[in-house]
Image (cartoon, rainbow, N blue to C red):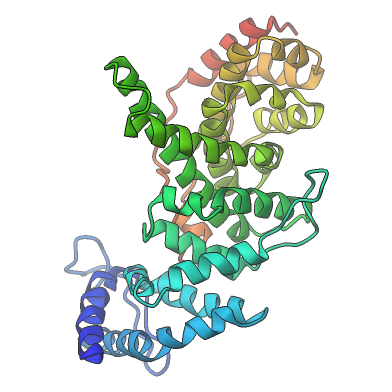
Length: 378
């Protein structure tokens, strides 16, 4: 009965996941990339019935025979959990809907526990310990978050906010170079920040409606914002990633923007010399216009929230020159709105629009407002 149920479920998943297939391994590898003469308006040919059938068989076998054994793998000593996570990631990268099969086997909690057990910790001074997490475990947690197998609040109850912060700081401190190692962490962080922002808006609406302060909406918002406070130590790491790979920089910028909107008192952290150096490199570089817009808005909100930050900005000559040049229309990035993030992760798709446009003159206007707020001159 279990095998029959797994077969039926895998059939549905194989059909829904057919758009992820790009060919078959082994003999007679078939391309499913459409070309001239394709009947499919999307330009992609549907997988053959043989591909779908073999996919169904594979998923049924994994669900019935492999998943029950993975609990033992995750309970084993390192590096065995990373091998188990790698296997799951290979499957989930092609069949995202298969993530639902992890729930009845308890593999969601198991995967999270393994990530927490190996995540980079902080020492007594709050500095990251020299330990970089297995990218396979990080990516598995990404798949769990992406598939919404557990509510974000439940993930935070399991201590995910602290672990993501420690993991990101450890990776930055160790100089981990690959974008695919940062993007899953940034996606997990953004999911938590987005949930916090939504709950904060709901709580404000509740207060306007004069609901009791102990109402469920307000209490959930306060709880989530308390968890988001655990992300604040990642501020400097996020700023440093603004000069990284384009996809990483944009996702780090989105996280930083939400983090400081929800914690305006922490905005002054942007005024450190190191962070202003990074921000100057962004505004003076040829990055996406969307990233420049994110940074300018971020700084404007920070200056309005913490007026003392304006003095630090004025004291940084290179940063001042970059802002003034942009205000005068002398520089505005490479003109691109963003970047296709789905091509940066080898099958890992981060939900972020790459088609957001930046209106002509918008960057100069924002830079001019920032220059006025900080009383900047050439």
